[in-house]
Image 1 (cartoon, rainbow, N blue to C red):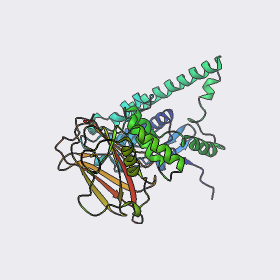
Image 2 (image 1 turned 45 degrees about the vertical axis):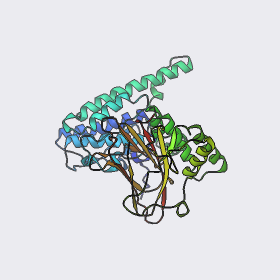
Image 3 (image 1 turned 135 degrees about the vertical axis):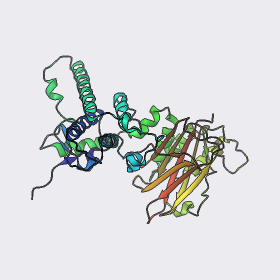
Image 4 (image 1 turned 180 degrees about the vertical axis):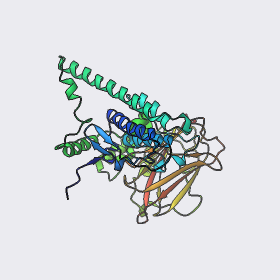
Length: 399
């Protein structure tokens, strides 16, 4: 039996360029438009079943029922997964959406048009979603525009115009050569793993520069060497006047918390405490400072959760716009998060990146009130090992 040499779209998750994603949208929308014209609907689009062949993404034709608007939603969700590296809405699909469910936004400078299109495709109101033919037309236009920008840049660099530019535009990453495509893909994936994650770029583009620095400091502590430990401590020290510890995080529902001897942990609490003592930062009469203390924009704390267990934390005095970042000790940790106002709004995670980090962006209009009890649940889905998590909160109400 011949060896299967196909490359599937799932191999590109988290490493997909803007141009490649437009190619994906063009090809999948083109296939859907043909199906819809015949009254056939595809259903859930799975990246693991989409073959990458030369310049094209091939969608197998399969009548799975559904409707045109749901096909459009599924296509856009798959495109988001290509760009972000993980499925949106924790992979639970369109049926879990509510009218106020936030949808992730791509923040690459070239993503404005794509964002506008994907936001329409992922709209809660099915009637607001575009037809497949419209998506295909917009994608084709953007592919031509980006190809033109590449030619201009190449000609400027070379100092001479050449008719060969059109041929060069057909090469990788838009095209894969039969004999070399697997090798090229492996080399590119290896290179791109050295780049910052989409999520970290997203934080900074949202004006969350300090949050991104705190996140990077925490990530340095994964299996840290002495040099990385010192670098992380220096980063935490730099932002000591902005950050406090969330000692209000107590498990209110069960005994799922851990002490540090029971689990591999970052050591964030110890570092922050040491930094605070070194700076002689005045506390509020408690052993630690409270995450709701209005003098500090950012609060951070590390908690352990027992294997196969859910820990529930309560927070107060969070009002309006909020950012929450949940960082597991292991990038491959299996876990779920739930963030909601007790008896009120349920917030959906905005995204999860390749480091296993979960992000919540809550705008001011849908944010909690000062009197609300904001609850965060973390479920350790690993039944064999305890897990440690760092929680970072940017409370915009604070100074």
